[in-house]
Image 1 (cartoon, protein in one colour):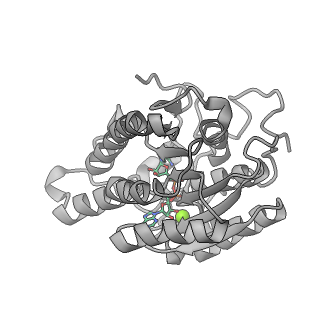
Image 2: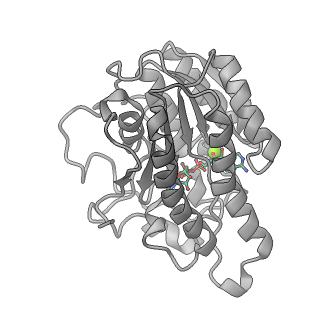
Image 3: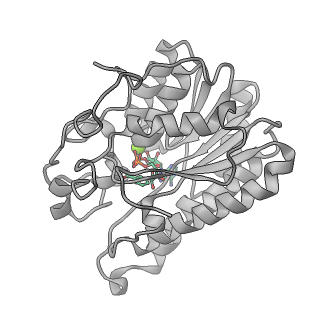
Length: 297
Ligand code: NAD
Ligand code: MG
């Protein structure tokens, strides 16, 4: 298989998939996703861009977070992985790939809607890695609801707790550890600008994440801590089959992008590597769109 540095046509680099209708309870698992995804196990080639870095990545068991964890390890970083206890099978696989790359993998299962875990996971990551100089706030939940009258107060609260409130809590604790030169990268979404009608709560959290990223970047700049965001478009991950999309939408997932296909998780990894590596030292408060060509602000 070609690595990410080989000259390739982006239209055909990955197949144009038409996922069958399928359902998984929340959170979904990569091991049960049809078709499977590319998280870079066989294709991501490191070039020493994160040598010696110590990173906490939330939602690192699957999808985009797992591709970022694998890429960070191949670039020379040690990684602490936060994920839900139900995702142990996915997390074990990613830990194995990290260790095979020569990196340290620290597994820290827990629920980010719990304020105590948001703090504890940071302390445990710093303990396990001997310090912390990179944070990737990537965990998120997405549950499609077609009509505002069916969108419960409870769901609205849960989505905000997981997607943006936990991001604030984790970042707040992490800042106590992060030295000058450290970075925070937050996962937002194209939904921040182009909200789907069935994702009112989710899309609102993603707009909040963009704003939080710019504000925090400005605040932490004098301390030498850089904060940025990555905004993925339609990426084939377990999020989409655990009620993230209406079932009838799955076979068409990602086909409306200019590239005409859904993205694979490993296509996101270089954006997170760039924003974490010192090569982006003059990039702050930026949202890097990785969305198959959908015009974005
Ligand atoms: P994913 O399901 O593989 O990853 C999401 C992860 O979030 C889960 O693996 C889980 O570990 C974590 N998570 C969810 N609720 C949690 C909780 N209460 N406590 C702890 N962890 C929790 O799906 P993904 O698509 O890779 O999502 C990663 C990020 O990318 C999310 O923030 C998502 O909003 C964002 N994103 C995804 C897409 C896409 O098309 N897949 C598009 C734009 C943005
Ligand atoms: Mg998962």
